[in-house]
Length: 245
Ligand code: BV8
Image 1 (cartoon, helix red, strand yellow):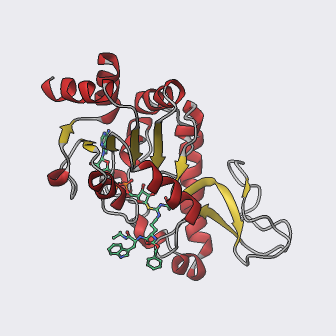
Image 2: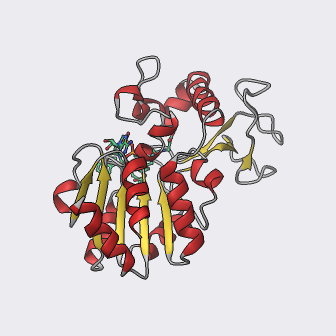
């Protein structure tokens, strides 16, 4: 309890709070994490499939993986972690969330001004970058009427509107996340802290003088560098610390 009291004390005295979330925040909703036990699909690992090269080589298999994930996301609900974070953004206009997750659970929980570093699993883009199509468009049909889905403008392949490994993040999202590292308290919740540039924001916040916190069920590469590491399921620890505010 001491750790939770310490975090609650810091939050009560904070003006600005930034929470960086990863797949662990959606685990309690039933969505497998990338590197946890449920993270494999047909014995593929996410990092094998979430790349432009994998899509160019075998778009159907990559789309089958995304279609399977879209179906999972569509059939689950936000959990207590999403609910607490959404309330924090609604009550405090300098408490914000930056997510690595491409599910829409933070959105469905009502999180304000969410920064989505890796895009959305319900957005699509034209694989050919055709001039006639918008940069991306939302298509949340589950299942797709046609597999693989196509660009309605050029008839070519559509691709998931997410950032793959080896692809650059949208500079506007990186800029927004950068700005949010200048905060009083920075919390890394449910992330293995392995993927960059996302994992770098924790170090940036620390350099800005933020009090840094990790909420995770395991130790990660970041555990040794945070001011406070609280072990446990984030859907419990966030609800418990929220009750102390
Ligand atoms: C880029 C969208 C420039 C797709 C994702 C070497 C060093 C540094 C960087 C690199 C490098 N080699 C390559 C790179 C760059 C690469 C990278 O970081 N690779 C890693 C693997 C080393 N990064 C990139 O490519 C990025 N772009 O750098 O651009 C560039 C340009 C060209 C060439 C090179 C560089 C783009 C990265 C974005 C990739 N896309 N997602 C999709 O989702 O389909 S990342 C993917 O991993 C997901 O978004 C996921 O969220 C994210 C990070 O994983 P986590 O969220 O942390 O999930 P994970 O399963 O790993 O961990 C879950 C954690 O939760 C665990 O710690 C677990 O203990 C915990 N947990 C579980 N349950 C709970 C819990 N905690 C609390 N409560 C629970 N209940």
